[in-house]
Length: 343
Ligand SMILES: [Zn+2]
Image 1 (cartoon, protein in one colour):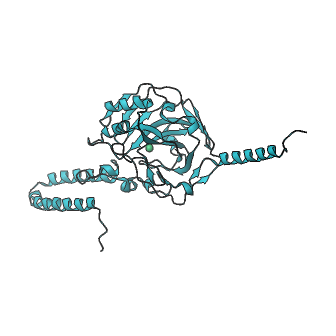
Image 2 (image 1 turned 90 degrees about the vertical axis):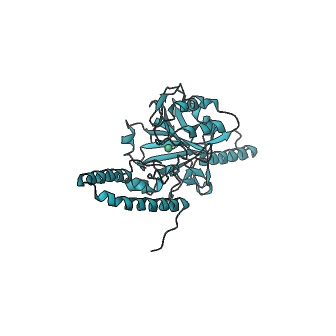
């Protein structure tokens, strides 16, 4: 059998495993002296932990996987959640020149996005998530129906380094915001996920800016109180509108069919990824790395690697703009030629 190429981390893990095996061998003679009952107990504990690993109860990001604390990284998510190995997974790398302009991708209408609310902001062990009252909704942009906002959360790197989930022409931004919406007819996300187009996620990139973005002060401040996994605090009044770029800068976006980017990776998401990034200073970006995973380590690298397109087409807005300018050109030529002058 040919050994597959091993990464330095895997080699190191192998080495540690060998030592552990030797220690285990030495201990085995001792184990023989244990009573049958004790052996059964050990076996059950072993089985319980084995099952826990194999059922994917504890999925993790690549950044969390170490020999000392092995966990189910993105390449193993499909063991427990078949959908994670599906053919229309997210995120993806968007290659701009391969995207198709689509005139149906008109500007979005954001309703009640300007309303302030006091949501709960929580460290859920994988990200920071804010629940949103269901009043805010979006329509237009070739969405089948209006979709109401449910929650938003973020994905980031380490201390402001690369950390977005989607990439554009291979470029990874420092952070990505996902505002999760569901079709208005559904009353909870669980139901919406059973509908093949039940969920619409709006994705926004961040870019490092020289000055701080004061509209993010409430979130950045709240992070200090939720560094430990499982903790939450109330967020002082924020609106969805203040977290995203001004509406006039949101006409350029990409659209494709994909999935949730965390287990269960359900393939019922209509993705919209906006081109215009949100500015945040280096310090503001860094604060997210002070949050902690369940094991107390810094919460960094909270992104899934990009997934294969498998023949999917990514559409881009802007087709209508081209048509509009063509119409304008015809109109102005007609005017110059005196054709449009009334008799
Ligand atoms: Zn997300």
